[in-house]
Image 1 (cartoon, rainbow, N blue to C red):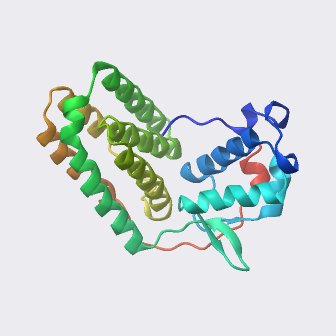
Image 2: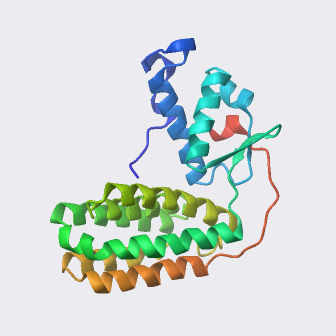
Length: 244
């Protein structure tokens, strides 16, 4: 998952205007801003996403916001409910187990191919992500740490050369971020960052079998931090969330 552009960096004047006054580029920036807010837990699972409020915050039409929410719903980051509208998806305990089971099957299964294909440039990118993740975790920014962890796992999967499976891993990482937001232990949230460095070292040495085993233990450890306790839904202050 690539670093994403925020709304603060791009304004309406820099976007190509489309039908109805909302530019296609502007829509992309808004989509990425909302999805980042979900993945980074600034918008919590269960939070209501009112079309009128989002339209006011971003200065676009409700029709444009509706299209963006529909796109987010297709990626399972947002749930659309008749008469209630849109809300950030809240995974169930069963869905959480399914997501981690799927990650075990796919990510572990990709490690041998990644070990065959990884290059020094690939390893350097992964080490940079791991270092940034460790730094933000030390700084206490666990939400950013989870986002960087998701990016690490997505980049790792792409080295396999299987774009279809890599896209699926990215979507699973999005879902994992929601799961951690709902059920994660705030004291120990997300990946053990030293595991990422160990994975890189094994892959660089072509030790796909050992990397597969470490990935399995790594995902087990993340899942073991989850506590299946439900929280109440909330209505977020969208102006505050998207004001930076």
